[in-house]
Image (tube, rainbow, N blue to C red; front, side, top):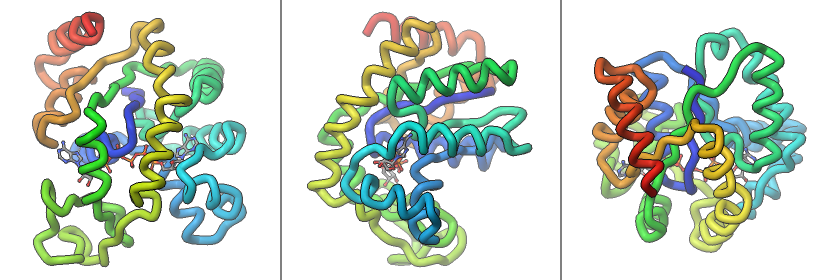
Length: 232
Ligand code: AP5
């Protein structure tokens, strides 16, 4: 199962990708996480990426394509993966297609998380992340049991720098300009599935399993969702 999670910032892509990894063992490949780790370590990649990420701009395509090529070559990504946050431009999508074709692989489905803008802002302004294990919380929708502490590892929680309102505005603008054209790109290839990202975390997880063919109703779910997308 080679999946892409596509959608605006804060739509719940990371939450769902982590859930698929935890429950189905499909590795989550989050380019945002890779960049934030590099920035925290102060590596060469981190130094290159810092300014782009802090301002809500995209890191240049050539840097991102190299990161993904390296990550997809690792042993755990050979049996399937969920790309969370990549591709984000048509150029990245074309490079990914070529890279996978050279390896005799292809994307099986692109899941597009649809969420109205007011909900995006609400989700990002309340998001908390664990500094240690990366678990994702929300002050209202998914609060930690103990204030400021991760339920899973006990690590301290923090708010992402790029979740400040002015950076969120920029990220949304960049999303519309650079990433939204991928909806057409993947629709033309018959790979796009639209999901209503405003439903609860568990309900959305079940929808994604049906689309990915990983639930008993797999094929049926695929047909239904394809129709839902085509009617949009
Ligand atoms: P990245 O980390 O990829 O950020 P993003 O795409 O903007 O997505 P987010 O992580 O903000 O949101 P999400 O959809 O994962 O939502 P989440 O599950 O956390 O990228 C960051 C930056 O890195 C970019 O701006 C760019 O600079 C750079 N970058 C990364 N990839 C790049 C690339 N390919 N090319 C160039 N540059 C790149 O959920 C959000 C909140 O909602 C949480 O609080 C969560 O608890 C809550 N929530 C989730 N689901 C639900 C639900 N169903 N109901 C209620 N609440 C929910």
